[in-house]
Image 1 (spheres, rainbow, N blue to C red):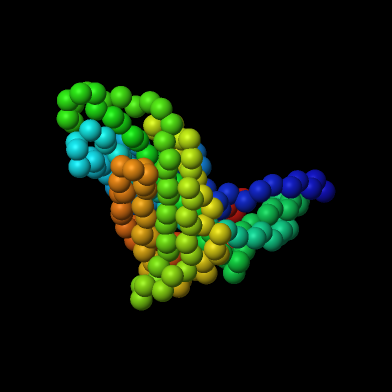
Image 2 (cartoon, one colour; image 1 turned 90 degrees about the vertical axis):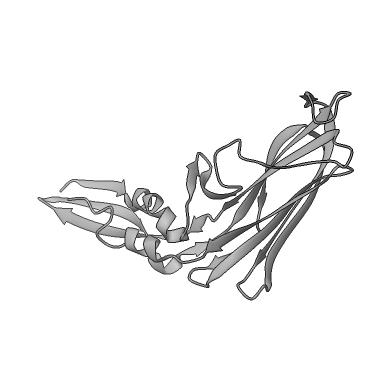
Length: 208
């Protein structure tokens, strides 16, 4: 009897199901599925000018919900063959959010809001707080990033495990270029996991 070990295909089905699972539009990058404020592509940014119209700050925020789970090993057989496959255990589903902040800093040369340059090093402060529907604080991150380039991104672990199906949350975020100003935003997120449970059901990833 041949015995082959193979991995279940349920994860791919779950990724395809992420948008309805989150209850809003979602995008997928190499790092995983995320929600973005402002909505749009890589270059979508919130922006502001300093009071003297000589410095421009832009910012973008992404929430990576990061579904987590454990696997169990199951043995199946068909046609005289037997194999094992590792499948996600729906009972262990949970979220482990992380945050990504992007910024761009530009300086005008002589003329207000005119041709700008993006160079030098800048002090950047990123902040995010995860709130429940009744505005109770669940998790918070705050980092001061010194000597950063005029354009950049940084990803910050949320450090808090969120149980499935615990309601709707809101992330309030900000990016500050010290001395120039702060950009703020909010991003809603639904912690429902029903679509993942469906994707991780016994039939998904089943080898016929």
